[in-house]
Image 1 (cartoon, helix red, strand yellow):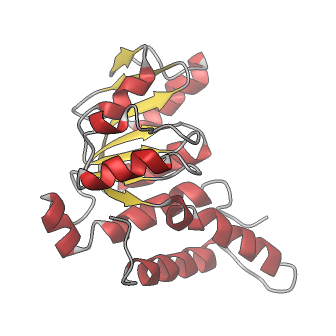
Image 2 (image 1 turned 120 degrees about the horizontal axis):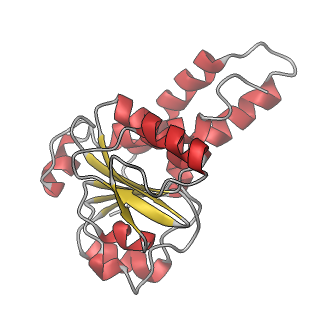
Amino acid sequence: GVRGRREATGRGVMFGLRQAVSDKNDMKRLKLTTGLEGKSVIVQGFGNVGYYAAKFLQEQGATIVGVVEWDGAVYNPKGINIEDLDKHRIETKSITNFPKAKTIKQGREVLEYECDILIPAALESQITSENAPRIKAKIIAEGANGPVTADAEDILLKKGILIIPDMYLNAGGVTVSYFEWLKTSHTCGSVGWRNALKKALNAAWLMPSKHW
């Protein structure tokens, strides 16, 4: 394997979002400032993708206000320390009943809470035509494969929500898979794939076609 393989997809989500929120025109239209600093984020899924995406976004200055899992969710508008939540998850086998946040038994309801960035990073078809009208996030970052249905996408776009597609944000995992293959004949470390990923995501975001 390649160093950094475990966190690659989550790191790619962070890199992709960081590039997206650096676009002054897009952020002006969304009435947001540029940069990740201070952005409120809700993440669905606390596996490899969701955990590392949340961890790296928090390191970039974003505020993780909610985390959703299969058995419930935790929410704190002032922010959740991801490392502390992970320790709690390891100790109790669940993110629920985390003492520094409110537990929401009906976890999927948290997808509809106000936030700047919503990251569905668990399962497909989590945002549908049924709940799309109630989504309040300004940016949806598809960390999972196909978390937004086609019908929901139409509704979200009409609401002016920016959808960052899974094919773009999942590039971290794909890039590292390539380097794992490349490693059979060349030496490659985590710095190499990180630099390649950053360049690719930056170039892709600057292409004319965007998901509005």
